[in-house]
Length: 287
Image (cartoon, rainbow, N blue to C red; front, top):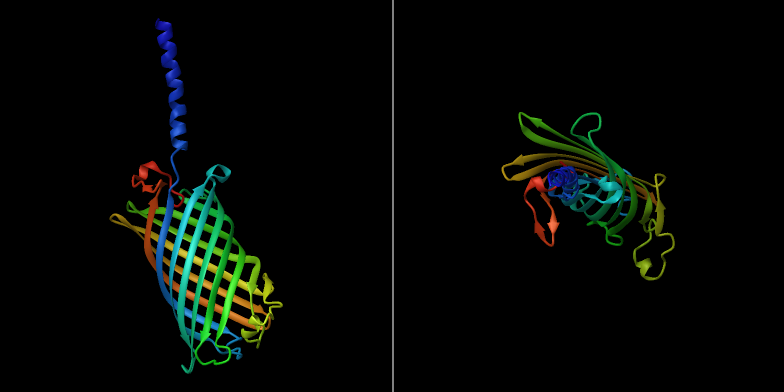
């Protein structure tokens, strides 16, 4: 009887660490979501609307951006999935303030990044991988009567890299992040120089969808953020630098913006619509 009791106790002791490992492995990964508002400067040129190479339109841009980051099952939860929706609108004018251009863009990107933890120092995470981004928008010139607008549409494959560093200042937690993204190939829409959009309705669509790479397109997005917990909220401050240049079908375009961002961050785990607020019950992809 004593031998049987000892065997049962020994068996239970062997199962305890296995059970603990299983529970730890089963801890769900949360989704880190932020919604940011931004305001900054715009610099636009489109030779379809303004043939002069020196005619740049400058003004302001406002944007709303939603970002979600979550670890997924790929490669034993070493892959982070990032989704970004960006909506921006800007108003600009020429140097003489005799004409205005309005621009609006919507883009969505989906990326998968491999995460390296504690790179060089504790608390530093590095993520690198690829993303796909679709973008559509317009530039409208108030002075032009025949060709007042220029449409834009792009589909890109990008290389993306991100560094996240969490540290404390006298027990106050701070998390900073830098991310850079650049397309290396894709397709884009561009009408031919001097051709009215009316021709498209007549079936003249040859060459308006072009392959894009470094020879005719350069685009980069630099994103810097800082997360600051304030009471029950986490505030995210940021700076977004975006450069977009194309030279296709005889039309040169650039859209450059520098935007200050501010917004709120939340972490949640979704189970049938329910969200957990106990931070000890999930693992974060970001913090």
